[in-house]
Image 1: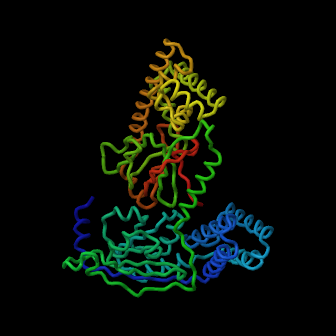
Image 2 (image 1 turned 180 degrees about the vertical axis):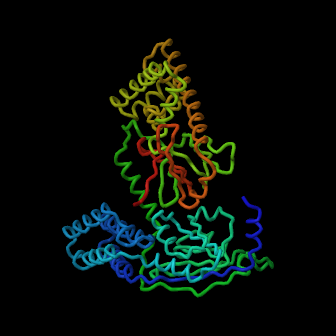
Image 3 (image 1 turned 90 degrees about the vertical axis):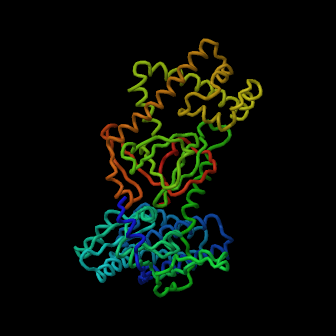
Length: 507
């Protein structure tokens, strides 16, 4: 952190906030048609579930087009095109009146847009920057979702060479203390969080959006409720605002909710696949990541964290309950627990690994057999009431059946319930404690090896993209991601193991 940057932040004399509209000749008709579809779905079809699903898909694709800087013909991939066409055919067969009155027009306009080889938003951005360019001009472009390398190259190739460009996601820009001559937000203020509305880190701050959306900012009276006591806010002192811009038409499409709809849909699918007799479900929470992505983390797991400002401790493992917003987590792009087991067997258990794992599998298979024969709830009741295993809740029982669980707190009682004799109980319990200890050591080994491969130099790319992907030399080219946490929903959900610690997105 540069001290001079802190001084610049607090000595910024004046900020001018501007609002710019980009003509949406291609996107506006499509937006109008999707809005008509939304109104019809709500009023004539009483929010029919299948039509709502189609509406969410259309909104998702529309906002993908509206948020991209690529030529429109490169924004939507073939899979999404096919998915949309399939939905159109379904509506034609099931809702012929709606198809002929609304959907056929959406199909035509969608086709027209994705055939265009330019992008109005991108063209406007580099033309705007060039119109204000001077030697050494420092410009920050801030986006809600990280823009791709290709999008960045398109802009950079059109800019005057002496302009100094920096790219940030909204969250990374919030944590950066540098001051710029020009800060350009791609989107209107309501698209971003509260931070952009009250912290201005540029001499000029410009919000650029399509004219489909209102582009304005009304300064809030931060201390309005105590103003009568002669206390006032200096938040907007020396900040002047340009002319507000109203949207074209009467479109009520909103992007908010698409991410949470995707999470809800995923959870519904999980619930369909997981019932009381399942032995695989694990209690987990939703972790929201940059770029409208999310993952599920087991509530009792350990998470590897990247700390770029702790030079001597770049990578460390902490309990999931201690994870916070804005932490960078390190995850393998294959199951991390599998890697831990591999390292534990190879580097710590060594020649004993095979026998130890056989003991682990033996008691688990006995437990699974009982669950399959009697049902999860019945086994839970027996363990609690007959064998006085107080921890044998449905959630715990699912966890014990899962391959990731090693040594439950009351394992000796569980083994007794599985008809193990005293000698076998002692051997198995001691072995599970040994495996558990080996896993902890393996976790530390992995963290140390990853720390040797990483450096704080990757922070710039993390700030630009919100994540960083690297291939590990230490682990035979295994792929890892470093992901920034945006927020955490601590509600508990039952999730299949193969869906844990796995970044997903709404695309």
